[in-house]
Structure formats: C-alpha cells, structure tokens
Image 1 (cartoon, protein in one colour):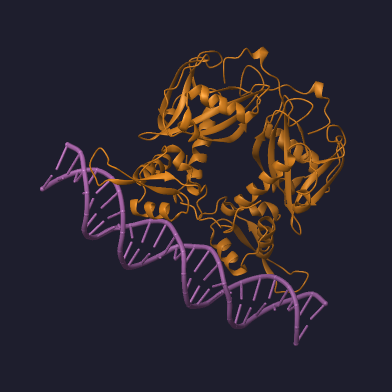
Image 2 (cartoon, chains in turn orange, red, cyan, yellow; image 1 turned 30 degrees about the vertical axis):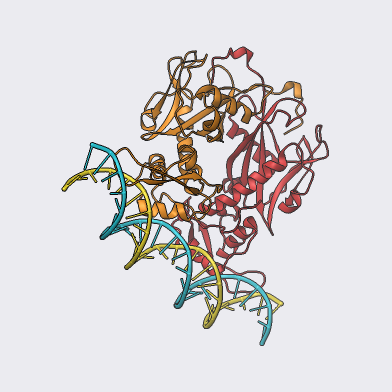
Length: 239
Length: 239
DNA sequence: GTAATAGTGTCTGTGAGACACTATAAA
DNA sequence: TTTATAGTGTCTCACAGACACTATTAC
C-alpha cells in the first residue's frame, strides 16, 4: 500500500472462479463449457468478473446462485470459502486478470443453468474432470480445492455441508470416503463422530436403506465447527 | 470467467500487503508509518501495487526484499505464503482496490528501511500492534496472519523459518511458545520434535547460553515439511 | 554453593486401529 | 435364506501429558 498516484495505478480485471463440489456416488465438480473466446468449447470453472459495487465475497455469493440455481435451505446449507488468488501474468490471454478462487460444498446437485457465457454446464466425477482439457489455470485451482476439502474434513465438521439437513452416520461416512478416496472402519468412524462434541445431534427419526439393513438413526448437523483432536486421513496427502 | 468484452471490464487496483512476523523475545510484526494520504501518519502493513509485468507472488517477493532489506541466507530461510484476498468495496477510500495478503516468517529482524512511501518502519510486539490504530483493514489481516502462523506450527515444520539456519531445541521451543503464547513441557516437546522424521538434523556443534546451563546440541532444519500426527496447541484457538 | 539449562526415564490415560459379534431390514 | 446395513464391545498399541532425576554450565 504505497503512495501511488491513484490515477496512475495499473488496471487489472478481477474475477471469481467457483469450485463447486458435491458428493453423489463419488466426489463431483461443476464445470461449464465456454461459449466465447478464449477457450471457447473448453470446460472451465464457473465464475465471472467482480462488479465495481460488490465485495469479492458478494461476487462469489452471486456467482454461486447464478451458476447453480441453489435456493432456500440448500443454499443455506452450502459452505463457501475463499481458496486463494491466482495472478500469473499470462493466465488470461486477453488482459491482465487476477482470479480469486472459491470453494463451495453443496448438499445436492441442482441442475446447473447454462448462462449467457456458457453453452453447457454439468457435473463431472473428479477423476474424469482432472483428465479433461481445462481452460486457463483451472486445473490447478481444482487440485487446490480438492486438497483443501480433504484437509478440512480432518479438523472441521464441514462434511455435513455435503449431506443435506439430515443424514445417517452411514451417509456421513460415505461423504468422507468419497472426498478422501479411501475406506474407513465403520465402528471407529461412529465412535469418533459421536465423541466429537457438537458434530451431530440425533433425531427421533429412523431411516431404512434401499438395499436392506437395519434402520439407521437420523442425525442433524450440530453447532460445533471444529474437531479436536482431528480425524486424520493417516495416509500420504496426495492429490 | 464470463464472455465480457475485454475492453469494458471494471478496473481494479491490485496490491499486496505483507504481514512479516519474527520472534525475538516474543512474536513481533513489521509495520510502517504511512507518509501519504489516506491514513497518513497511521501505522500500516508494508506493501504496494502489483506491477502489470509481474505475477502476484513476484510482487510479494519484491515487496519483502524492498521493505525488509533481507538478503542471502536470511531471505532464503524466510517462509512466504499467500494468506488471502481482501476486497471490500470501501476498503480503500481512493479507489476500488483488492489486496492480496501474504504471510512472511523471517529468522531475523533486519533493520527495516523507511521507503519512499513510509516515514518510518519498525517492529512491534504483537500485543502492542493489535492495540494500535491501524490503516485500512490491516488489523483484520494481522489477526488472520497470526492464526495462520499458529495453526501451521501445529502440522508443519515451519518453526525453523523463525530460528535461523541453526538452533538448539530450547530455542525452537521458545519460538513455539512465543507464537502460541503458552508454555510447553520441555521433555514432551523434545520427544515430539525428535520423533518427527525430517524436522531437525543434529550437528556436531554445541552451544552454551548466556545464563548458565549445560551446553545444548545445535540442530539444522531437516527436509520434512509436515508433522503427522500434529503437535497440537490443545487449548482454545483464540486470537 | 545456587540458578539455569540440557538430556533422559517413566508412569498413566486417551484414543485410534483392527476386528468380532448381534440385530434388523430388503430381496 | 442371503445380503446388506446398523449398533456395540473389546483388545492392543501409539502417543501425549505430567513429572522426576541427573548432568553441566555461568555466576
């Protein structure tokens, strides 16, 4: 923050890029197919320019709604946080652009709306997405997002952002297994979740799966945000 | 990343703000006294505009050198990472500015140079700094930086960035105690550091303190970057 | 001598990993 | 009946916290 003449500052474009993650069978990410140059026809993260009248966080909120159509309790249950800022000189061939990346964890997969700028929008399984040709530096941003999500499940209760307003412990475990890409011991997982104060609250409801099995207790997210000591992946932290 | 007409993008100024931390008796932060409006005469984080020809990370590198005068092995031993991006609409009264904050951990306290934009520069004990009137949203940025530093000491070997190229385990413990603001059990601390593969490497050197005591073995930073399982603060994570 | 620091040993409790066992549902 | 899931119990090992003890230095 120097004493620059305000009228002679170097002008930048500022965008937000959204990494929207969801768990169905596995971890999935929302991508759009670009309709305009550069990278027309290439898959990319949804996002857009920050308007002069809104904060960066507000721009992220706005893009989340515009690109996913999330509303009501699904929007309220969605976790949104800043990931980091990417500002290589040549990351956008048009002009000097700085992109602030956000991570969103949504409980459901709303039908994405192909906006004015995108000719298509759909969810990709993470493994598939990471093998696509991806516009700009969005491949790197996605990798950072996945690692952030994996790390945060270790020491926070954020997994409930991916389950919806009520869930069984089996469903919660599937979220962990999908994000971490490894299986967990059911008994130990239960013990840890239930021993963590404020992670979940039990309800009187019970739910039965499609493929048999005893009816499971239904839980709600608790008020706790952190898990200490953490629930560690205890494997090599690879992408 | 939308299909905006590149020539009609909303222009932003982009700055980097540096939170440079060091440990002497306690945790200290480098501040400058602003020489120009806005906030002339107020203490602020060092930083400046990102140039059109450099990446954001390069701007942070440049500002670190310019503001601290760090060179050689001290610069090489300094840890630098992106903290987050702050972009409220009204954070700078001059114009729309987005600031990318960086955290730097330096082993020494070089005599800061009051640059063209600053009339003074000095190190403040963290407690004192947090009670000063601080320019822009820099107070919030400092708090985020301190929490990041505290958290990273838990699961990384970053503390060696605050000690210099060689150190005793007692000195390393003082770094932890200064950053965390709590005392640690000496024996347990030793056991954890030495049991963590790649945290430190012993040298043949020994060092004697100023106030008596047996000579201590001197260590070098090891190659390991992460500590798993982590060394937890095991207290409430407060600012 | 005393104070301060380094280095080591040990007891205990917590908690995670592994795994066994029972109960209840759908097919 | 088989298969799949929920819920519980238990053994063991790793490891952190607490704390005691000895050794070596400056003063």
